[in-house]
Length: 272
Ligand SMILES: [Zn+2]
Image 1 (cartoon, rainbow, N blue to C red):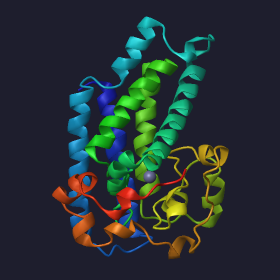
Image 2 (image 1 turned 90 degrees about the vertical axis):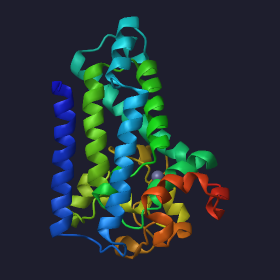
Image 3 (image 1 turned 120 degrees about the vertical axis):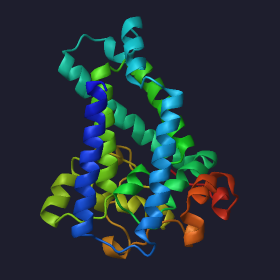
Image 4 (image 1 turned 135 degrees about the vertical axis):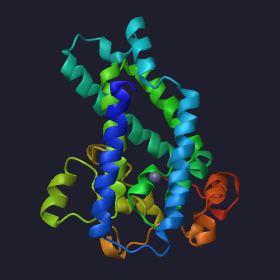
């Protein structure tokens, strides 16, 4: 295996293991649905997403970056920059792209059908951070590939960004609660669990806020930041109203078919 693959896999398994041990020993909430059943659905989606990724971009997004570099395309190449600054800027800009991609998946009804597979999880833990429908994984890959070409993202930044994005998703979905002295200063920089839990609230206005994955600045900058849930962190109800029964939100076939089954929620227009 290439060293990049080891780095990606190592950080993925490492962060996942740390957060799963943390939530096993000091959980924030108790799940009404058996963890075993949720994990079967969520990790099945991880497997499907990995297969889709392999099919769409067999050699990974770094190949797109190498192509962009060879062709000298991309906004980041307009001004000569030191390598470290180029990588840092590219990672920050890609995080901004993911923020807008996330808003788009809430705004457009067709994309919301796909993204609600993620929101239908009735509980939040590290596995929810990986629970995305394979179509969303595929579309996200295409959006990232386009962003890499337009921005001229260097290959080193792709590796760093993929590691950070995966680690952030696992971290901010995990079922833990940071102490107040850490929560508020940390939230000034990155998306914490309490901040992202608001995005998984059943209250629509709260679902349509806090879209960030890694840096918390995008929600503040683009006016989508909710500092607190109406019912408070302990009182907010997770999931989607239309998917409150276990039969509708858990199960391998069920989660795969959510985008294709009509529910009242499909007609709901989400405001950004
Ligand atoms: Zn969302």
